[in-house]
Image (cartoon, rainbow, N blue to C red; front, side, top):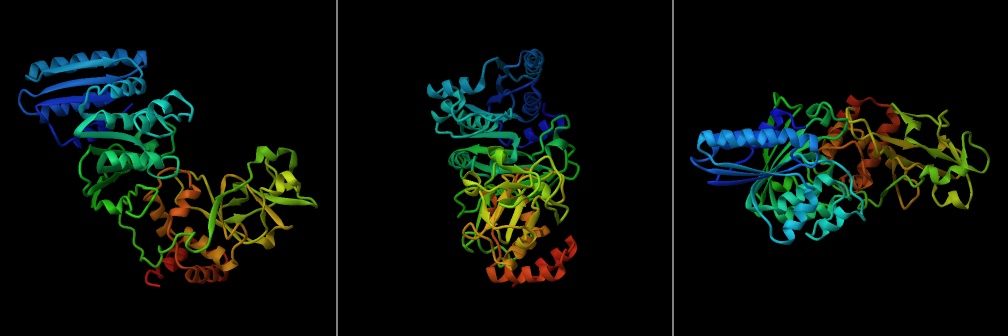
Length: 463
């Protein structure tokens, strides 16, 4: 359910109040967003303006509360001289909207939504229906958002509160490309976490509120933030669109720089590919090689590294755990292994409330026996041609990724707890020469704490 303060903030983003307002609220729940919108309409709309409301909700219990609310809204409109008519639709929104669009169905001046969040399979009915309107997406919330956009008038306004996961990652790439062909993005508001905006939900993802305008020319974007639903610490910045979606980015990642992140071009100059390096998700999916698990490494085996081997800045292997420490070498396992060498690894998942989203470690071949290493699927591995890196480069990349300035840059386009290999591929790094310099400094410092890491990295703004 949408808290009242958030609903009020969302409705405050609407700018246009024509004489005939047509509102769509898909996944309306008990009507929190419709209630806030109606109150704003009665306050902002011109005299005698009319409001037509269409709500979609399939949960019978919620529809009972929603029905009472809609009747009270119609009564309030009558008393104020504003004709208000509500159409309560107790059917599946994705099916109904897809059908309506195929026949050029109704259009709306305003769309407001807090959609459901659920993955949808590639072979599901929903995916087939969405493809009919040119939308390819993997989650119900982006499906609702896409259909809301498709049902909006030219210059219609869409305000939605959604998880931030669509802003980056390869799964949502087709949706992002479709999105920017349809709308102009005018506002983004980000919360610290879903926990703080929605106290009863257990989803460790940042939520954002977006305002979109159908078919409008793209202009500047207002990026705002607050820790929670009180908006007590609200701040905003007005940015050119190119600071939010980079013109040369084929992924169309959506950056949300809520504050200025310092750093010269020399620190953020090259992709890993341009430096000659690669990054991959750990190749070993452990349950597929269960027959080869070894709790203790033996002759003719390879170390198998998990996230729990890297903790609080330290590497511990072997480590007593329910998971194995090694894999027996065989034809079925060797194809998933990498040659022993120097690698930089990051964890794919971190706690949302950790100080840093990016946590990098160096794999030192001197600490591991044998000719091969297995990296489990919850690690990202930075390599050179599927072999190890130069020792100083490996240390330098880890030092760079563990700095606060890089973490803040990363958070500008990643709001969830997962660090994808695609995200790392799209990041910018210093030159190889500078990475080697970083690595040599890290080797001398052994285990530097955060403050000296940040001072050292930031001292190379103009390097």
